[in-house]
Amino acid sequence: MLNDPLTFRVLIPGLTRIRASGRDQYLADAKIKVGFLNSSFNNISIKQTTNDVQYSTTLDIRGEEASKLGSFHEILELKLQEDDSSTTTLKIHADITMTGKLASLGRRVVEWKARELTAAVVKNLSRAIEQL
Image (cartoon, rainbow, N blue to C red; front, side, top):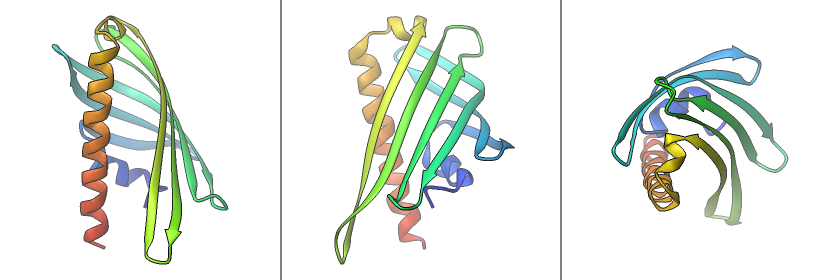
C-alpha cells in the first residue's frame, strides 16, 4: 500500500493529482494552507526508492509554489517494523528544507503544519487499512 503512488492521493491532505513521469518517478499537484498563506504547488517532483528487504520506502520530493512564494525539498522515509506477531509500527522520518516566503513563516508554524499533516496521513492510513 505504501508503495502505491495512487494511494498517496487518498492519504495526503491537499494532494489533488499524481501521475507517473518515469519509473518510480511522479509529478503531483497540491493545495495547502500554511499559516496565512494559501499555496498551490504544481508539478511536484517525487522520486521513490523502495527497499523490500527492510520494508521501507524513501521519497525525494521537490516543489515550487505556483506564485513563486518559495520552494521545498523533502526526504521522507517510511518504514514498517513488525513489533510482534500482531502489531506493526509505521516509522516516519522527514527532513525538509524550505525557502522564500514559505520559510519566513517561522519554524513553529511550519512544524505545527507538519504535525497536522502527519496526523491526517496516519488517520487516513488507518481508515484505508480498515477498509482492506
